[in-house]
Image (tube, rainbow, N blue to C red; front, side, top):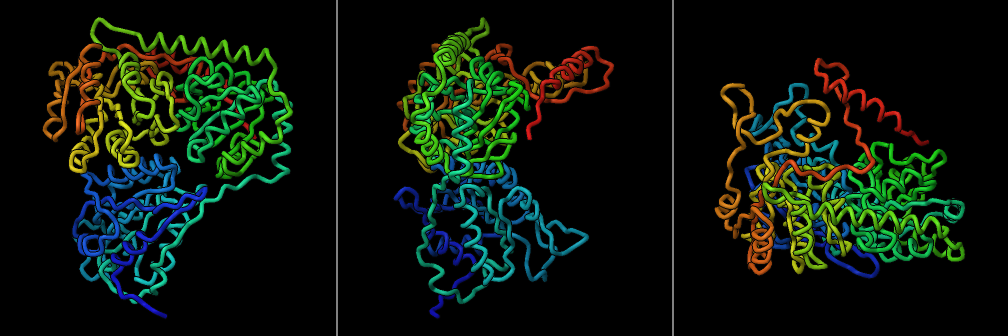
Length: 621
């Protein structure tokens, strides 16, 4: 057998560079490159290999967590058909990636993590940055990746790559199992050599199938749809990943079934489609939530039915409501006691539509109700987006202005705080890839690195990053990476005085304001309830190389956005909004427990309302 002598680091780089995926006749490399920060735990192993071989493009992020966010956002934009590998040193470099790994796994996005690890030979222990675990010498901080990875392995010997790398690729390219994959790499093992079989490094193509559920299950689903009087479709992220928007359009139109959107599925249909009734659930709108409350059949397409989507299992109140789960992952297809249709969303919808061609669909009365509710909701969105304040801009107004500045193919990126809910309700998406939210893990700090990942995946599109001031302060330095690599972002930093989303949740739950606003400590009270902090976000961004503007009213915001579109590098717009103007909820609820015992009357009242709301929760089996 012909062999090639390589180090473990070199073998990993060479192998990854020769992995391809194929779907619908389109073949492409699976890895777009490697994101990483070097330290003693990986610089002489993977770092040496990346420099010498040059098989994979190396990108230099500012933070290891941000690197994973870039990779996950890139993979999401590429419909999970391409991603990055991310490498770090041992210790803090590795654990910085844990949050990003959790977000990727929760959101079913493929990312390969290659953290350095402590010496396999154990001779120099304890090494710099090693956590000594008293109960075993076989544990390191990299074991923290186990619960947040879909596949985890530690490479103690070079020949273990022969089984570990193919298994990692199997999981990464499996649309049902994908998520973060971690291969922990002891720093001495990375540099060890082995005579690898030459054919191990030959090009390999991983085929992405489009399976269809069994005929027996399709027949049951067809009968359920035929019998339904008030059916409703929930469009989740799986619609976008399987590129099912066109068939969803035909399905909804032919059968007269309204479609509502999750955070991951927003954009499945354009906002003005006659059967797109908008967002559902705790952050949902009037039309979708009213239809959900009376739906007798809910067709769940590519959604994992999170608590925000189901309004903590209070959204569906019809006494005989049934569910159909259309998704590639059996784990999600069975939720809510659904009839599971485990398969590709695009092909499964097409198979159902072919069998329902003569069904006729919903009656005229239901379609008229859908049209009326949609018109009412569209008018409410207009009203919210036009809300002003004597103090200056408002967040819903800002969302409307930025939305108007976007072209049909431009992308908005966001992740955490109060904006995800406002965007889900108010943003009008025209393209399936025009709306990019990380809301499975609601990761503060995702926005700017996520925006960079989107731009790297689609450099022809303008990318608008909306980020709150609290999240901006957590992770803003990938602005430097965007400048370094020449990937232009338009970042709007929305200053509202801190963590206003949780502040609003806190006060609505009966607790007085505490610890959620960016305020100076008051010498009299001893608490953080003084004046708001004064932070010049534009100056901060300019110091990192961005073009920076400040907007305090509609005119200055529109002017800054116009200049941003003409700019040749990343632009940061510091926009100040009135934190008191909020977009309300619409006949929905989210289960956040209230203190059962409290001396504060406001908390007692909130607890009583909480217990009443819980009476609407349903359990499905």
